[in-house]
Amino acid sequence: MTTTKKFIYLLLIATLASCQDLIVEDISEETVHILVPQDNVSTMSSTITFAWEKIEDADSYQIQIVSPDFATAQTLCYDSLTTNNKITFSLNPGKYEWRVKALNDISETKYTKHKIVIDSTLDLSSEKILLYAPTEGATLGSDSINFRWNKLYNADNYKFMLTNTNNETIAEKLLTASECGIKLPADGMYQWSVRASNANTSTQTFSATFTIDTKAPEASLKKTPTDKQTILSDTITFSWTTLQDAGSEVYDSLIIAHDSALSNKVLSIKTTGSTYSDTLSAGTYYWTVISIDKAGNKCVNNSVYTFVKE
Image (cartoon, rainbow, N blue to C red; front, side, top):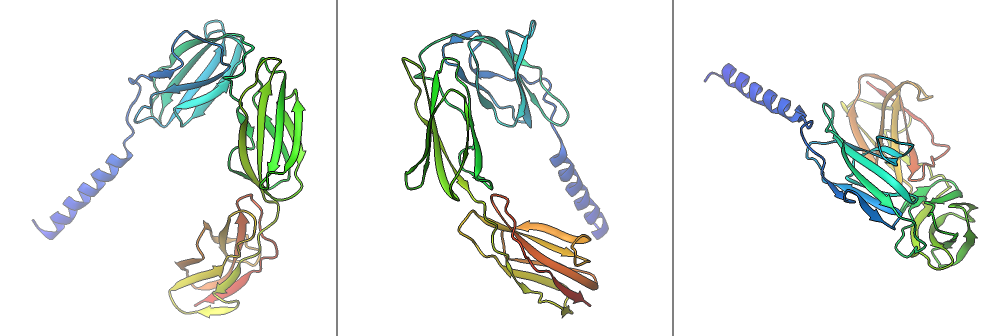
């Protein structure tokens, strides 16, 4: 085989392999198999986990819940796309029908439907409190927080508690609503918890931790290229020192532009490292590094360096 033919052969194989990677399978003939709850199940628990088997080539799933059924629907309780194969949702006593289908870029399955009945019960011991916000592990840039959780049909009240890392009580309230707004005293990590009760029973206590970080990180220290430096080499290495603060994790955004206002950008990338190398054409450039923490706070007073690439 000549060198030219061998090159064409290898190119053809590479092209076919690349095309194969881009093939999206048709899933229209697949069926979504529901795991729980089973069809026509009756339960006294109002917090339900809906789960189904994954379909290999599906990208997402659409799940809908109506009352009392799809033929005579009066209320759309839930309608959402998810990449997971389960959700947990709280429903008041009543009759419901739910359905789920799988989707990808070119096709979708038919809906699979099941019915479910939620019976009224005064027993809260097996019920779950879903902590909507702040979620477990969240980092927030504001100290004014609106805590939200699901409302249980037969709950008379909710015991809300907020503590800090020293287990000191910041707030303790008995509420009839399923939300509570509080301004926190300082940055740091907190835990909040909720327990629902009525005259006879109560749920377990459900809790989540979160972090408040309202302070902007310090500006990173730029090292190379130095201000007003002339560079002759083809590759330019940008380097800096990130100053970690006492708040949340910090990452950097490297910006290279043709103007000092950084509006005519050549490059803007997010990085957790402290160096970046690239080649640039001849000209005058401006660069800076903006430090941003996990809560979204940006550093202030970050200087802009200029350099000339010859």
